[in-house]
Length: 496
Image (cartoon, rainbow, N blue to C red; front, side):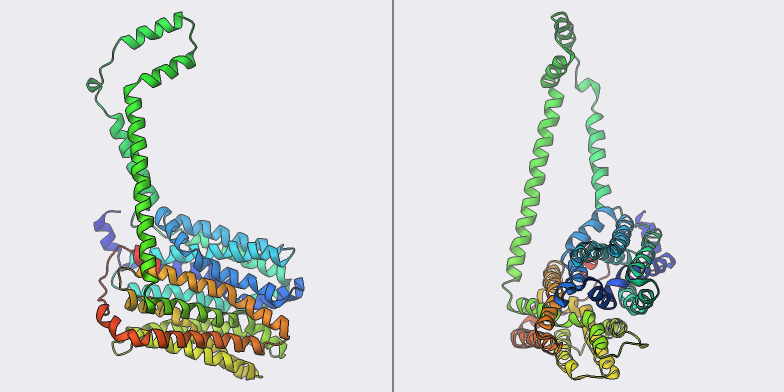
């Protein structure tokens, strides 16, 4: 599409169609993983494994997508949002349907944890990228609507999966949910690219170089009669056709020149890649020397380690207390309040008189205190309120880019955010199994939630004592940047 055409569709009517299909894409992809707490008790009954072992399924499906986010973003940049969304639909649906025939929990690690997890990561990268490309002035609003699809999906899928398990069993539930996920391929249809993906641009450039090479004028390459005479002589001497071809290729100056130029171009590409990787490693090493950024990485790891287990275990806690029959699943409350938290905390972070680092530290502390109170709650109302609080504070993922920008600046935002997502994904992967092992050891969730709350509080203290004393220094060095809207969405997509 021409630049003039691209400017016309920005923030236009078709852009809101992109918002709708992107919202539905995240809704269909993340609905089951965000409400995996409903499936967790069914897997416990079906496979009779320990809670720590079974919890790996839910932790992998959320952690793998975060850890693999750089790869997912690279796929979208190179191939485009539409092909990646179609492929992710096959992965998510195939992983869910394979999980219906899982013979053991270890198989679920692959089918549900890895396959569905990577598929969700691809959907997230594709939907965020295409939304950024179609919006300029209202990009924040559009991204806010699209990313709430995960929370709405978790809220509705929790109830739907609960009913499907009662009606058709665990296998039937996964098959039906997997069939619904095939609609991701339909969501990819309206995702018309405004810019050619990197893979097609490279192919086009290579094709043009080939045409230039083949369009050399004949007069610049005079044809001599000597090769023809030599060929006739060689035939008379009984040489084979293969010998003639080999001799002709080795003596063709144009072929030799092409091979030489191709080899030198390959060497230049390798050197360029090496320089880019060396620069990336050097910049990452510099980031890890920043005391405030390191404290943020540690705080995010501890927060993820403690805050994610309730998404999986709250349903089992309610069932152990006999509070699950005929009531909205607690996982639904966590999911919908996470969406509310994303919107509210995002709006608060935009206010000039609120410091985003203070706000983020407050949410981490609040999560830790709520987790410490959960073992005391013995009725549904108390558990529902505490679940809503955990979900609301977990919405602080929406202000993580703001905090990162304040610390490292807008230039290093993409790279720093990738490092943060690695720490967050690692904490999400470890949290549920560790809590499950505590239950297997003590046969009670009390110590497990005390551990989770302690981790979140420790993360809050790490931010408070390491980052806040340096706040004024970093505020002067990296003042809040004024956001300039641009149609180049590579940075925005990788961060969002």
